Length: 193
Image 1 (cartoon, rainbow, N blue to C red):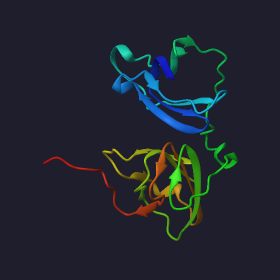
Image 2 (image 1 turned 180 degrees about the vertical axis):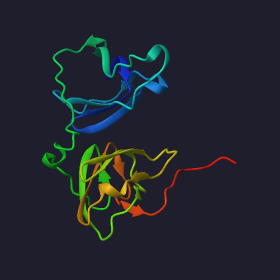
Image 3 (image 1 turned 90 degrees about the horizontal axis):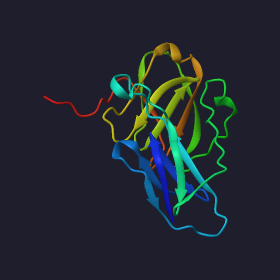
Image 4 (image 1 turned 45 degrees about the horizontal axis):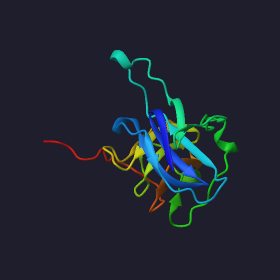
């Protein structure tokens, strides 16, 4: 089968019957994906990620999503339904979390609870994770991506509480080693001399 989009803004993960079949990225000018359909009546899902906005020049009105028509083997697909993911702080507690047994497979939400004795500025390291977003106590720390350049997220001291704290991670692909660690120093990736 050949699935084609007029435009993907910014990144689309494609799934057939819940299994990943490919990723298309605007920055690579990708808009066509070929895959094998396991059976008749298979379900097609597309997770589109907004990777940020252009804030200058001719692309100032930077629209997001699947723009234009979508075609499967040259036939225009219709009857799509779409829904946003619940990413507001008030919506995080209502999510369905996926347990982790060594490795994580995405896209899915994961949750961990940890204790803090003395809240202070720190850095969240998600070594082994691939790509996603992290929150502590409902505060969005930002996005992480294994390709870098930065390899840690800043955690302001006031975000942490003395006692029990909650980490929520939305992993888009999967983690070979699903561990998170708070460290006193950042890893900002390679530096140039």
